[in-house]
Amino acid sequence: MSRLERFLGKPEVVEIDGEKFEINSLCGEDFDLVVKMSDKTKAAEAMKEMTKKTLKKAVPDMTDEEFDKLPMSFLNKVLEALMRVNSLDSEKP
Image (cartoon, rainbow, N blue to C red; front, side, top):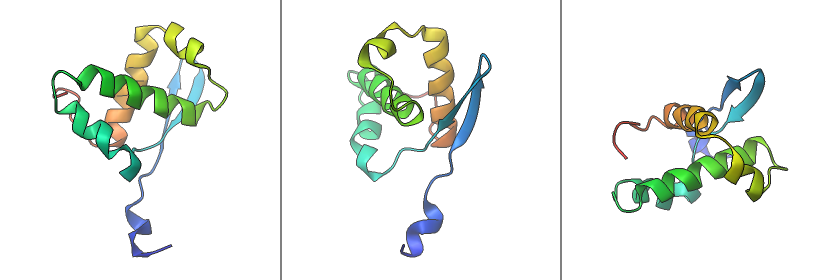
């Protein structure tokens, strides 16, 4: 690893209804999603993609169908943790 290793994000373990999920930070490959968030017409799509990608890392066997059926209360908790881990302002899409 290079000297940039110390800048790699640290995951946060979030407990939701007794289940623990490791929420990892976004990285360079996700830059386009962060840029999309600044476009109000694409912000919702970007947040959905980020949340889905984050959950897929935490639960590799999650299916698209499962994701689509998850309640918003659960997805909101994941998204809040994702915003914290990445130091993103959740008030500004």
